[in-house]
Length: 228
Image (cartoon, rainbow, N blue to C red; front, side, top):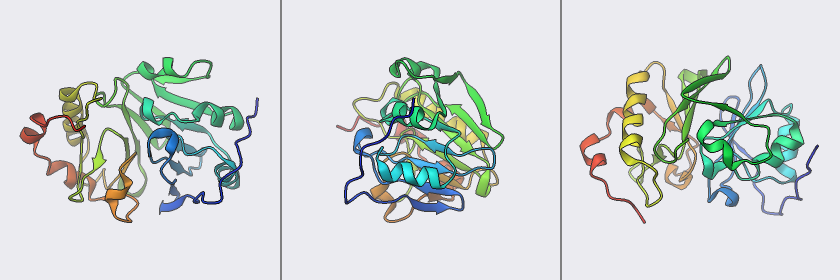
């Protein structure tokens, strides 16, 4: 069943280009200011997390050729994902521990790691939430969509952020270290975070991504106290 979105407000902002084939939507109130992305691929287009669901979102996606699927990085990024899936009749992919929070939806789940497209790999990075994940795209030297697993910092870098709602901080740190082991400067050029876009100061993605991860102070992170 197709579900039409409500009309867009007069202040709705169109998605902004990030890299060739990639756009970022304005922060979404439904996901507490989360940033969603639209990725155009030969095998079918993907949303990474749910943007605000209104007429302008629908029109943009339809102009780009519709959707193969919506990938959700964590439970806080769901927004109107079910309505988007119903409208476009597309896949809805989420780590298995978050799926129960989407009752009635036709959900595709994975456990540790899953290729969801020839150029896309989902990676379980538990910590922020039980099913928190990152999505790796092979384009542009390697792009990692991190949801709230890794966020921009005030100093212009990137880091995991411990809050009062963090599910398991030591696991989040270990899974950040795992990303350092998995990637290299040749395979990870960009990070596209799922929130705190204001710290990017007008940039749309974090460049020199692998170097940013290598510069993290693991000892200081392990002792970090929750932010309120």
